[in-house]
Length: 118
Image (cartoon, rainbow, N blue to C red):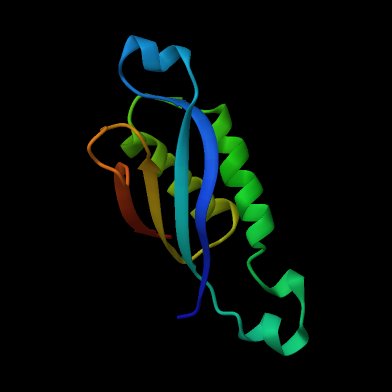
């Protein structure tokens, strides 16, 4: 299966379990790999036939920026479900990195999930 991917989408959100985390916005990096058959779009050079990554980025940004989860696990599950449904994506891999959450983890910490439409 072909894939459309987004790497390093930067979004600020309220995320975390500590009281001080509930009062600030923290940066998250979001990576997506979304299964999508690109042949029809390629054949017709037609945006309407492909997965519009600009629209996906905007939706991810809007949803995440408006969210207020304690756990990135919760954000990942809700965001994956939303994208699968709204964009009719057959399967996706979603990774959320929280840079700076653990000072010694220079590349950040986070979660990675893979979900499919039912």
